[in-house]
Image (cartoon, rainbow, N blue to C red; front, top):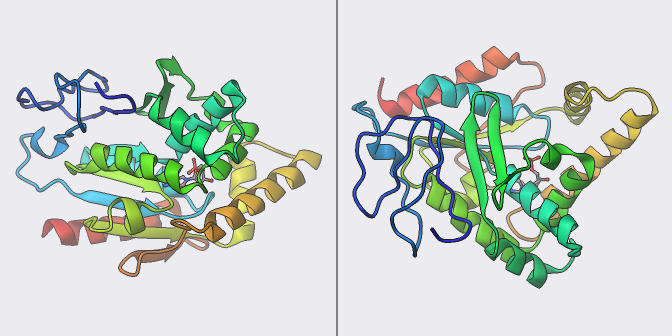
Length: 271
Ligand code: DC
């Protein structure tokens, strides 16, 4: 299998020919094809007559993307892919190899030499970097900051976008991130841009991470800086696609947000 190629599904398999990937429930298996791009066949994997959509959910940290994407994927029987986890995994590798977050060439080389796997599980994506489970480690502060910094580089983004397209092109995916509707899948069937008031997002993030006291201000400041970087970088800055459903979740419950997104999905499926 080509380095960096990611195979994943939480759906059951019907069949696969020699060029296709063989996937099982919550399992990562290997492609019979050792070279070239991965061909993900999630669209052909279930017996459901429904067309398998590509659903893009973008937005800043703390807007509720992950929860909504996970719940939506579960309801539809789709795969939920957290694209940010891939940037996080690369940042972690850069830390381990002492590669500067500012060295675009070295980071791009590091990426193309890496195997970053996302395995959907009930508790979110399990993240494997070169065979090691780094799921918890990539959520730590230094990696979070590093992910935002490595993501500004065009060559890094090129590699990430190519891998993400390979993973999602067969449909049956809810992919969340910053540029899914604008860059990775500009023709996605459903695009949602989930936003919320910055103060509310900060509060949610602090609650999620259980941060209190003096550490809270530092965490909030980091979130603001990451936001600024994600929104102002030259390549694929965080922005809503013109045809995205823009949802401000500030005054909405999780259920209300999910319902709005489901309505758009239902429309697309013609239900
Ligand atoms: O979604 P997250 O917080 O795990 O993302 C971590 C960083 O990765 C985020 O600060 C910006 C970057 N990212 C990106 O540039 N494009 C994506 N599609 C997803 C994440």
